[in-house]
Image 1 (tube, rainbow, N blue to C red):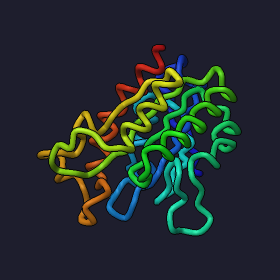
Image 2: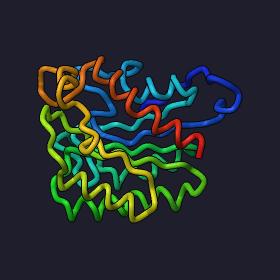
Image 3: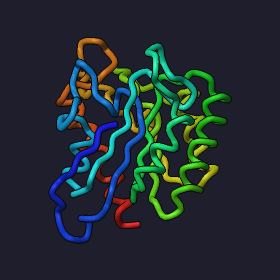
Length: 201
């Protein structure tokens, strides 16, 4: 996990802590988005929040990916709780495959976070794909959305909003999957208003 402090925009947000749980789209990749260039750091800085980032490439609600030592979201809830955040954003994951397994794991993950952090405000962001053309929906997006709805949590569908389709696809790196630094800047502009709404809730 990566932690870091940001100069608060005002005294109101000085104590607020943001925890982001996600995959390589949150963590950053060789294409871009590491450290201060990633959308988590950009969002935190612009809203004057203290960030703890737990992003592990290849992971999701159901998968730990091919790298040894990495864990699915269900096994990282203790890390979220230990940070005692005021706001939690869970992102992903395009690494999940099965709709039924993803929905079951997402419900369990989100239920635990909500139960163990009853005062935290929680935002769920679905899998962020790099498709250039509109795709309508995907089984994983539908699964995570259904899990968030079941628990009464706000959900942002990157699929339905068409992030990275059309001209925005040029913000995906040469691997065809991960955003560049400019892509993370773009993501920050999509996600910041959603986190801002959490602050006002």
